Length: 491
Image 1 (cartoon, rainbow, N blue to C red):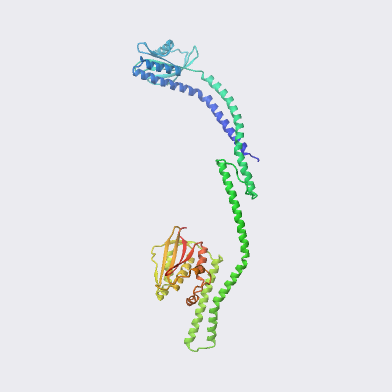
Image 2: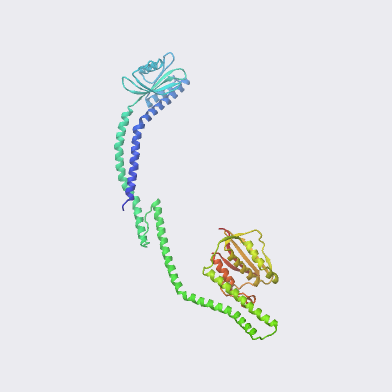
């Protein structure tokens, strides 16, 4: 490998750690002293609050209050001195308070030594906080001088250690420790990254074996992190691929079986040609017979000649309808018919079909029940759905007996609309139901011949519904038969 994740991780972690250590060192060098001074200043202010509260409560002479101040003085290394307006000492925390008293007088009478290095840090009406370097001892102090609420003058003083020397020593020590920490961390990082790169290399090896279609390789790690999650999915993918290849082999075997069934398809084609020939044989024979009768002038009267001509025209019309239906069915089954998906009102389409067959229904005394008034919009090929509805309605008209009722209903489902056409009459034998969609299949051949049926209409319905990937079906009732189909109600 040209680039190792292990090396990259070690370099990144080392760089981040080194950067953090350098930033910490710089912060220590530049900000430790100001922080230390600010902390001292805040401590002096807190002591002042305690002292001023004691002055307001007149507790200077209470033993408990004096013990509290002494404890603060020892803990925070703060010296205190309080004098009243007459110069009498009211409170102190150091035995030799002469230097503090002199400091306080110099503050009151503004007679401080000019050689002392003094820098004011904060000042208000009550007190002033300053940083002072003594000219003789070169000691550095944080001092607060001011007046308490009871009118007494006070001074608080705390020594500042040589912070600069401390910072220098601290930085030097920190530098040594930091370099050692970086070296030790590099070693530990190099060792621990193996825990991450090891499983990754194992996954890489598994993927390599999977490219060679070896699905026995499985990830054995039990990590509960992202790598373990990835390994688990690699195992699942391996199982899925193995299953998919198995399915492909199964499909391949089925394809081989399909090739073997080619002969059966040829037999079906021959059967289809035989059915077509059988369906055309009767009308052709009738046409030929009556045409020969006309030619030989078997009957000379005009009424007989008209009857012969009507028979010839009727049989020719039936042949024409059957051939057109065969051509339509052939186009749909072989995918030559273009399916145009569009949105249209199926209620209006059904009413148009009913209007075109209204006269025939009136002649047969059929009562149509269709109560839908509001538009119902669906997605499908409008021309083909009209063909389906027309076939269903025509089929219902031709088989409607008994009460002579045709009931058309729309059922709104989650994403589809089911259209059903019911007609009263004799139910279809249950064993015949699956066969009604087969080309040229006729349950009652004599009656089908009576109204000119060819046995192709329902085959066209089935082919249309398959072309738009929707369902159709038939259902028996005690008093009739219902044919139905479904279309999408959503885009």
